[in-house]
Length: 184
Image (tube, rainbow, N blue to C red):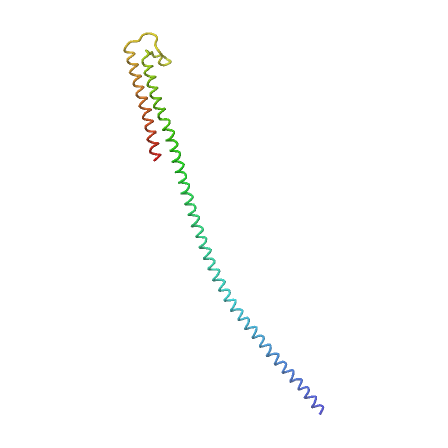
């Protein structure tokens, strides 16, 4: 009987070993299913996370493009304003210069008119002297002259004086008109 008792203990051991193997297999299958499930769960979470990241990246790219467009628009506006400011400053400077020129001309014009009158008086004085022509120009004549020579000299002096006076007055008038038109 000991033999049968030994058989039962061997069979018991075999049975226990089978049971352990079954438990281990069951445990392994549960563990691998659990791992597989968590992998699938992690994969789904990763897909959702990647989709959110892509969406955020696309939104960021749109925002960056919009910001670049805004920057370009602001740069164009700044350039336009700088050009407008430069034109305004140039116009202001030009107006100021014309005002200064007008002021100088208004001070100089009476002096020019006085100079024309003085030249006229000088020509009158010179024309009353008997003159003769020489290589040096008109010089006072020591000898007596004929009335025809004196008349021609006087006539030429009067014509010269009139032309000079009208030229100076015309120039002064044109300068004043130009100063008035640019100052307005």
